[in-house]
Amino acid sequence: MDTSSNDKVMKVENLKMYFPITRGLLRRKVGEIKAVDDISFEINKNETLGLVGESGCGKTTTGRCILRLYEPTSGSIIFSGNDISKMPERKLKNFRRNMGTIFQDPYGSLNPRQSAGGIVGDPLLVHQMATKRDVKDKVAELFRIVGLDPDMMDRVPHEFSGGQRQRIGIARALACSPSLIICDEPISALDVSIQAQIINLLEELQEKLALTYLFIAHDLAVVQHISDRVGVMYLGRIMEIAESGELYENPLHPYTKALLSAIPIPDPVAEKTRTRIVLKGEVPSPVNPPPGCHFHPRCQLAIPECSQARPPLRDVGSGHYVACIRV
Amino acid sequence: MAEKPESSTPSVDAMGITAAPPRRSEWRRFSRVFFGRKLYLIGFIIVVIIFLAAIFAPLIAPYDPIKNDLPSRLQNPSTEHWLGTDQLGRDILSRIIYGTQISLIIGFSAVFSSAIIGALMGLAAAHFGGWVFAVIMRVADVLMALPAIILMMLIAGMMKGGGIWIVVFALSFGGIAPMCRMMCGMALSVKQNDYVLAGRAIGMSNWRIMLTQIFPNAFPPLIVGLTMGIGGVVLGEAGLSFLGIGVQAPTPSWGGMVMDGQRFLMTNPLISTLPGVAIMLLVFGFNMVGDGIRDAIDPRLRGVI
Image (tube, rainbow over all chains, first blue to last red; front, side, top):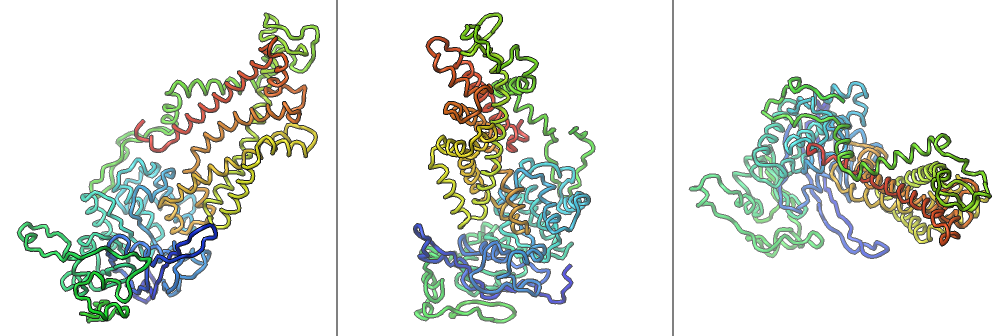
């Protein structure tokens, strides 16, 4: 798929996304929402990087910055050897071809007045990877790949079930054989039984087509299942990032520990002995995040130094990075 | 579009996804909603009759609508003049029949030109936001702030001659701002949907997003606006005719007839009420057709009906 010998599909460095808060008629800037506050990570070829965190921690914003649906405030996004973070829209088109997106809401992400075939064929036509004549065959092929009947191409999204709609979304993301697919909570709007089907489909496709995923979700169990590496985000920052098995077996950051302790165990006996770490307080506002480590006001291990400086993401061995001075 | 036989759609799906319910032909679904409700049907029939009257006016009108016949002026309905005659002895029925031509030409051209310009302005304002939005909407505000009739008088007065196209221009100018506002509001709400974001992520151009993603979803209220607009424009034309800057005198236009007849309202009320009834029927017919189309093209009704 990707012809470059480089095994990194994407490298994000010091990415910041601050949304201005404006007031009044003259749109005076009165503050900033620090949705993503200086994060760095890499996505290797043919792997799945999971990104977890609570609502509002900046996972989706990160995904949208990478897709350049937002203009990042600063930082760089290196994609196939080029920094796309400041690239003007007309140059960006070539890079957009190599990125696919699967959205959270299978009802909102498909144009209700376009046929399913039209939706899937659009990326092909936009990037001139198909002519008006052969687009139908290519779309039919994509339908088959995601497990949809190509005879349903002329139907509009309302005629499909939620799971089928998400398959249309996946087919659209696959259309231009992208080197990176950003899955923005692709299963959280689906029924549990359908969730499993979509997860299986995503895994199957990854194996067959050697895909690379950035998988954004808040369901920890699902992320553990599908991801090779997992990043944990809190209030716009990455707290810990490690191999999936390592992170779930041996979480180091106090926030990760608390997060993982919230996963129910599907075994009544074991579930009884599960000790939950209940965090005190609320997530602070990203408008005015706490100084130093963003997590320190809620952290059990916090010491005065925690509020002094931002803890760097440091390597604790075998690709396990953690942003905490106490571990 | 013919329906495919059930057996020719084998499920290719490996994971046991069942196929969606059998497909209904688009046209059948449309006509079933549209003609299934009596009011829409009545409106549709009225519109068809008005269209036929306009097209075949020379064949069905019993008299010349322009030629004066002073001896037989101000007559009440009789076997010769079914709806009576006006102050110049012209047959009212013939004038109403010919008036459909003027009304439809003015109605359609004014409404469509204002809709095209207004919709494009509204779409652009909503899609680009920022200063484009500010400039376009302020222009629309200025247009809205001027009373429509004054705006029309200004334009019609500036461009002397009083031809029908001047009237069309004046009337369409007054319709731009409401169309622009409506389209902008709809487009802003449509824009919130993820599929617009998906379009950008795919790399669609702004125009493509505006015309293929936003516009079709913001379109249904525009149909209603268009049809209601036709009624409004016919009324507006009547107002201009009253002020002497509408369609010029001998040409039969419904608005002009209403205004001509108002002097005889006490003695011969039919002269101005009958064209008024014609205007009312036209407005009602177009409104019903608009509502019917809106309901019938609603994709959410697919599969239900």
